[in-house]
Image 1 (cartoon, rainbow, N blue to C red):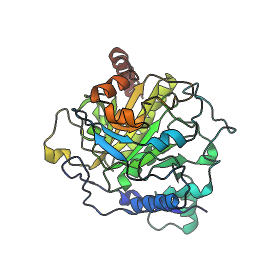
Image 2: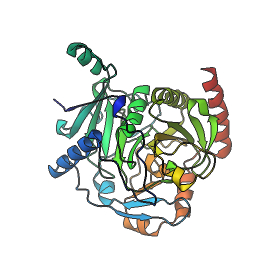
Image 3: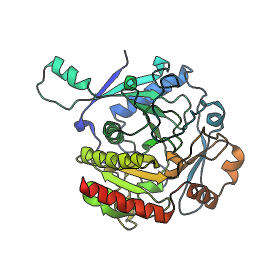
Length: 366
């Protein structure tokens, strides 16, 4: 039986403050969540359960205002499992294809269960309540960075790769459970370079600061936690601290449901970040990481099997983290080249503004 990791709102870290500069200086001690993931991940790496050994990755920050974090990970490009052929954003789950019910059980680190009752409740009642919501956390055997795991809600229920409120809420809560501002979560929809049509989110640690953590935003519906990113790449941004997680998760789910209904592919990236603001903040303000920023990029759909030799634009790349599969591109690419590649996958400005208007009316009518 898998290890159970039980948590409650009292376990959230209210401010994982970032040290100044581009690399992390984590002042807070590691939480139980961080220790459990990292120890379980390292132990499985030592046991040889991964497709390749992941050491320290060669990393460089591309010159330019976007400060892209480029990393060379050749083995991932060569040895990862062949992605499934995706033909529709609303493609049904197919049990005959690879899914997370077919993995080696030893790849599972733990099951996340939230204790929402607290207080004096009988052991049997608490056990029943805990079993209603289960997130299975397993190692990604083709990791892109340290601690790279997959978060799979109720694997045996065979959900297709479409976000649910539960998966979004646990994604946000996972970021809040970490004291490390470098812990990230993310999601690729079908048509946005998801590799497997079985609902899952990614989680991993990246030691370098990303611009998305403090990028200026413009309010759209701030009462629902919704903003627009004012810098490249254009997208939506949600923000929540520990007291509004459920409200913001519900709004995000309403937005992603709207996108799925409209057959619009999308990528989601969750990270510690400073509160939303429409201007560049002072350094002191920019270091605050009291809440979670959730970036959502509607984008042009890509169907068919992934082209592994291509520069795939998915959750990491849109957030400013660029894993490269070959040394030539890693060493020679410039910021302008990255912007040009990403731009091809984004909605045209006119289409994005029209989507924003429709989405705003939709949310106000709910």
